[in-house]
Every structure is written in structure tokens, then in C-alpha cells.
Image (cartoon, rainbow, N blue to C red; front, top):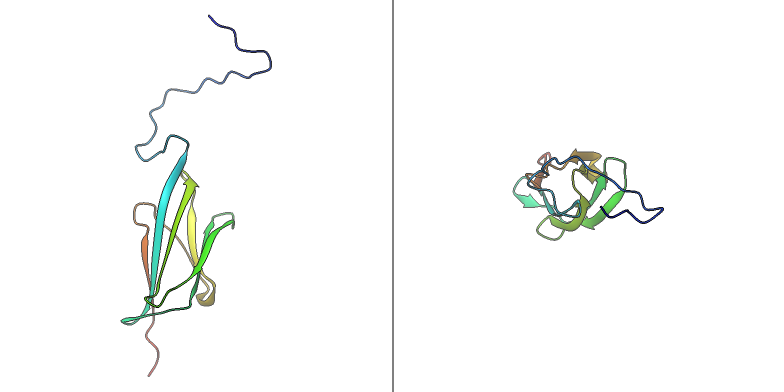
Length: 110
């Protein structure tokens, strides 16, 4: 058979079928949305950060008047992504199967 060029490693991978959700390049295009509400009221102006388990910031936004943020990004397949709201001291993992989060704050005391 053909011999590989000198100095070029030949890599043989086991033939395991990839998971259905795996993109060809190992990247997944994700749209992650969050809505911050207090009671029935949307909360505007809340900083929301998307980061990896290793604290690499993937993006940050401030909630709009309707309390929402939306992140569109490409992330390596299988990467754990957390959503953090520093003002609330909150950080939760994002489930790739359910990337639309609603953050409900406790109603203000009367």
C-alpha cells in the first residue's frame, strides 16, 4: 500500500459510531437562552455569564427588558457549560438537551 510521508504520524481510530448529536468537526452549535423573572415580572439589567467547568468565560450578557439573554456559540461536543448570575451567587449546569432556562427569583418581601 501507499507509505505515509516521513514525519507524518498515522493515527488509527477505533471504529466506534459517533453519538447522533456529534458534529463532524467535534463542535456543536448551541443556542442557550435564559429568562430571569421575579414573580411574574421580568428582571432587566442582570448580568449572566456562560462558562465552562474550568471557568473559561464563553460569553456574558445583560438581561433585556423582558429578562432574557440568548447565547449562540460553537462549543466542543461534550463540554460542560454552566450559567452563572454573579449578583445572585448562582451557578447551574446547562443541560444540552434543555438549553432554555428560566431563573425565578423569590418574590420581594412586602
